[in-house]
Image (tube, rainbow, N blue to C red; front, side, top):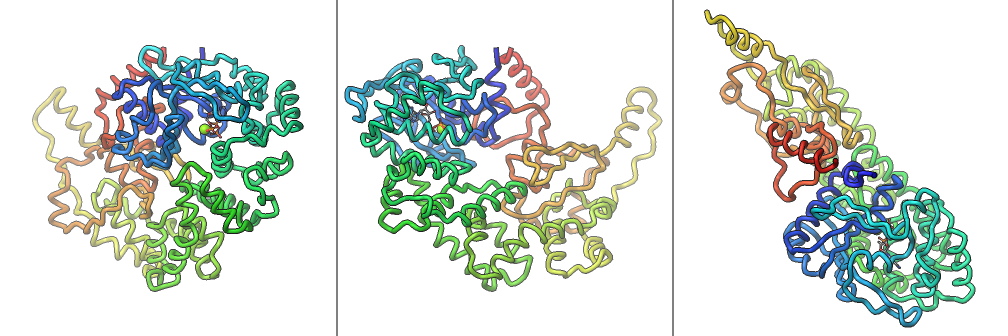
Length: 565
Ligand code: ATP
Ligand code: MG
């Protein structure tokens, strides 16, 4: 039997894993059983990216709201009818937690009668077989996949199949969803599903669509990777005018949307993961009138998405203004300004900026200025003992980078001249060999020559793909931006203080934290890089990541292994 928990842990991003842990702990504390449901299960099995996490609890999900908010969740919406919560968890992870419920449709197109139910009953109300699976996250049945409609087989066959003959009649938004999934995965509708779909179209089932479903589908469109492709399919099938009567493919800013996706890709390669949904909505509706846009906004259930969409223009405008002013007078100042700006804003401005100077600065930020990193004399810095083990290393490396950016250090000689006074004094010579013989003496000798600890290296682009290199490796230069783990402005240590801080013995293994600090990646990535184990087992949330003690780590690993068995 497939080990779905293991697959889950390996397929989710670190932030998504933390989200699972957080929701699980919260549900557990409230005494509710929790299941991962919907698209996440489908995508775990197919290998497609997992866009959001849909959970189902046996109980009222609304009761979890306060605890989740306390743990950092932003509530984007709460539905009293379905007792479900729309959340954004740290790291921008989108989560929906719904109550396990049964639905009974007395009249097509009318809201169904809902009642709390078991997870299996809940799966019966779902849209397609590939979406009607649940993975238990509960003690005793953790890892058990519930698949009453054999969705796994339909995933293998790559088809979209409804659960029963009345699926489209009961909820016509499922026809829109069928088009969306079929376009996204390039999976056809299964034969009978196709026949029901055609009949639904002919009989105009769609006129009974509920307004809440329209809002949900507009929202979902924003998160599609190929939103333009889906929009075209909607227009062809006649669904776009259902979402808004005046919406058409002609209203889309195709160039803007294309630019957005291209720049996002470029940013992803550099390790940034901007949330593009608000900007996608902006470009999809660029030529729609104000009234239509406010109608669309009102329909969307996730209010944090709507707010971000509304704020795009003004935020981009103020960033453009700052980039044109004194604050960005030099490359280093521009670098610092852009490093502290939200990636979403940089992305949106990169596409929409009117001033050539602003566009050029953003371009330099992503390309030319990053190459200046290469000019940092890493081997010489190592020789000078300016290594990531130094508490002041991030500050020194960042200062050198900024001076190089501004052309204030024009040659290697000038750079070394700047660096030399910052080097720590050499370590004291090792004590003369003691008269001691035997085991103790041998151990001391080994300690004296033991290499410095392994240094984790990684680059922002290689998300989660850090390698562990044997020391003495070239130290990693922290590019001080929003994604650098260490941003504390450290004052260069005075020689005396440095001497004091110096370890008495050479080669004291650096703590993982110190290594992580020197990494130019997001903290989460850095933590992962510095711990080259398998996918981390789901563990307790909200505690700051402490370096795990080897013994505890081994124990946890053994525990996880045991569970997988
Ligand atoms: P993705 O999030 O990748 O677009 P998804 O399948 O998770 O795909 P969501 O819109 O997030 O889609 O919905 C979550 C789950 O809720 C679905 O997988 C499905 O089981 C159920 N669902 C959503 N809309 C409907 C509907 N109209 N009828 C029945 N079930 C639905
Ligand atoms: Mg989903």
